[in-house]
Amino acid sequence: MQRSTDRILTTHAGSLPRPRDLLGLVRSRARGERVDEAAFQARLRQAVGEVVRKQAALGIDVVDDGEFGKPSFVTYVRERLGGLTRQEGERQSPWVRSREAISFPEFYKAQAGAVNARQALMSCTGPITYRGYKELQTDLDNLKAALAGVDVAEVFVPSISPSNIEDWNKNQYYKTPEDYLHAIGEAMRQEYQAIVAAGFLVQIDDPQLVTHYVVNPTATVEQCRRWAQMHVEALNHAIRGIPREKIRYHTCYGINMGPRVHDMEAKDIIDIVLRINAGAFSFEASNPRHEHEWTVWERAKIPDGAVLIPGVISHSTILVEHPELIAQRIARYAKIVGRQNVIAGSDCGFATFAGSDEVHESIVWAKFDALGKGARIASRELWAKQPGRRSAKAAAKPKRAPAKKPAKGRKTSARTARKVAKRR
Image 1 (tube, rainbow, N blue to C red):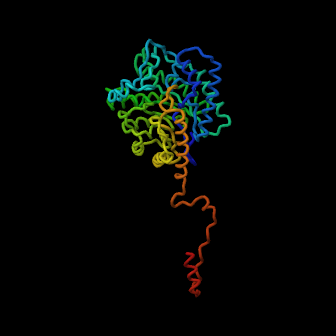
Image 2 (cartoon, rainbow, N blue to C red; image 1 turned 120 degrees about the horizontal axis):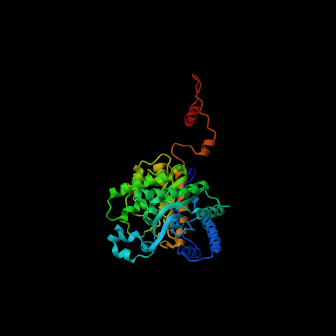
Image 3 (cartoon, rainbow, N blue to C red; image 1 turned 120 degrees about the vertical axis):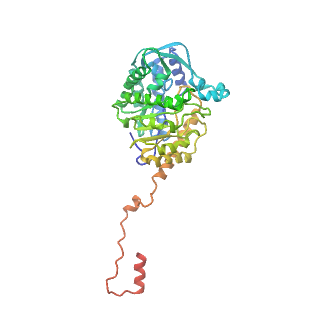
């Protein structure tokens, strides 16, 4: 995993706005409609190339494919896992029954988009197996092709965590929830390993770890902590043997433009998050409900050498952050773990579902531009001359020989004495 050795590197959380024509094809395929597959694959490959170049042009150092081939960051696995079958009806968004919706019913009732979105209802009715090799290989091949002639520091590929698959696809086959969770982990392990074997970082996307609290209104913080501990253990089992430096872990509170007053606080979950065997941790750090939590990270027992990827631009506002503010946010975390262990990121993805439009595409690119500028400001400040240290330019200059003291017993004139004193 690359580190910010001579400047602050930049990245983001994964999903990016799809071109409109590609979006239509992705939606049609997700609904099971017939599309011209050859035309879709050609357009997908072209679009991935375009978005990789766009990221590089805007100063993003650690890039991905924008998840362009996926209908969403989580539902894509329905085509890659055996044992899941479609049921009658639709899955309602968990936000509709969340603590947030209970506190602000009028607001959430009026919301469109991701909060009130409905998805196909799926359940586990047989053994969970991984069968998505072809789709995964297409993603990896398109990304490799897109990197030709593009200057970036590193590349990551998002992959969903077992806890989110468990939540989205109810168990009707395994005897216990633990059996179901571990079966998912064993299947997804094959995707995690394949991504790393292809030469990329794998990013484990796991918003469920912290949103479990807000979408389960009757659960206590302690109950959610016990739930989280079990799911972290299952995730660590799924990523066993994969070098930590090849794994980024991302958790967030979802693409929710609501009040967010019931988000689980970092102080209640951070110790469990840091038990995950990952080399880097990506998290929300810039929206108004979580920006103050840099002090929680300051007190946390962060594993030696871990890289922090704080969100310094947010998906939860259409305001474009000022580069100076971004630089200030970066500096806070550099003081905690050292500048070399900070990569500037985003709170969450900007199109976690293919049609998400909470943040317009033009605003997303403006935010990325500000991210690059803010990182450059932070780099100038963090790599500026440190007190007590000589700059490289100064170190290269020959030192002036110390003035010689007059020989003992030799008389000197007043003029000579003044010159000697001045040199000293």
